[in-house]
Amino acid sequence: MGKRLLLSISSTLLRARLRQSIVAAVGVAISIAMYIALSGFMNGLNGLLDGLILNRTPHIRIYNEIRASDQQPLERLIERSGGRDVSHPFINRIKPKGDQIAVRNAMAVINALRSDPRVDGIAPKVNAQVFFNAGTIEVNGAVNGIDPLEEDRLLNFSEYLLGCSVSDLAASANGVVLGKGLADKMRVGLGDAVQVSTITGDRFTLKVIGFYQSGMADFDNISCFVTLATAQNLLAKPRSWITDIQVRLKDLALAPAMAKEYARRFDVDALDIQTANAQFETGSSVRSLISYVVSIVLLLVAGFGIYNILNMMIYEKLDSIAILKATGFSGGDVRAIFINLSLIIGVCGGAVGLLLGALMAIGIDHIPFHFDALPTMTTYPVDHDPKYYLIAIAFALVTTYIAGWFPARKASRIDPVEIIRGK
Image 1 (cartoon, rainbow, N blue to C red):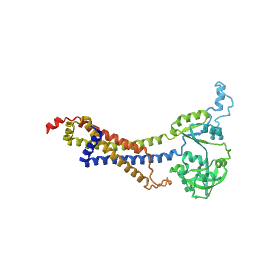
Image 2: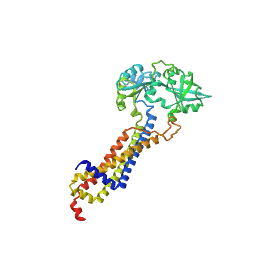
Image 3: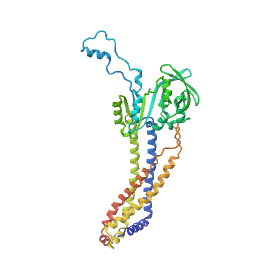
Image 4: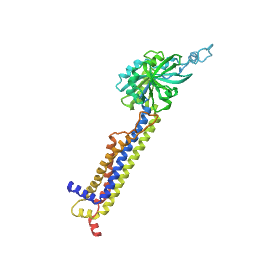
């Protein structure tokens, strides 16, 4: 039979059981809407939580681990003497030198990294322990000397700034951005001067130009940020003195292998982001898995609802099915009629679900969200990626097709003679 005729019969059966059909379509719509809203919200929340860690963690961190010599001079002397007693040993347990903190030949390493096509960006950094003079006491702190523009491009530094911009820090020769917890501890505000003492006893005066609040109290209570040149001046070091080289890759999955490669190539320590945040990434994966499982269950429940409605419709329409087959409709035609009926419910419910899901996602995105640890966040985070809408409508159509196929298969096997004889 013609497809138009089969579709017309499907529409007639649909209108004959309009209330049940609407209920099935509403079930599909609600399931799709909840999937879109839940997936967008869960992934938006995951993105927020991941950002708290990943925005402060480069894909690869190149540094120089402080460690004592693996073999001490006294041990070498004993080896050369063949294990015999050595007279007057006086050199033992040599401690690490101060210049081991910096990456050796840092500028050459940076130039080599910039020429690597797998690297998306590089942000050099100088870390140093200092003391802030607050009245009669000294507060322990950590100075992070950065290139503000590169730090923002690689690690979204500006998202956590209060009271200033990245360009303000880049243009300031003696400005400092204090961690919010550290600023509250010392009771200082914008424009105030703070005294900084290095571990060598040198004292400097810096001007507070802004605050940094990441949402992690342990970090905000001790950290501050200055330009790379300012940090090198504090420590009386040359411009080539770099303690960390932060690397961002074009492909994050390459980080573990490339970290090992750089460690061997440059004779440095290299830490990849997966190793540094293994436990956190596991938690993020579990949260994503839970959201997908819940969403799939919603769509499956809607599919079972359609199956039950179509199953009942077949039993109620046995006479109609017998008449159709008796007048020349084949089993395949009958199967197509009920599959069309199921897909009509899926398409109508899916279209309404997409619209309702978009409205729910927008509504969640406008709900006020105020949290002291994250002052830059004003509303709940929602991911509006179009892939959620594509997955939802595809899954809805597949689910409704499968839910309609089993009853349709049963209807196609009905013997009209048995039904008519029973009447």
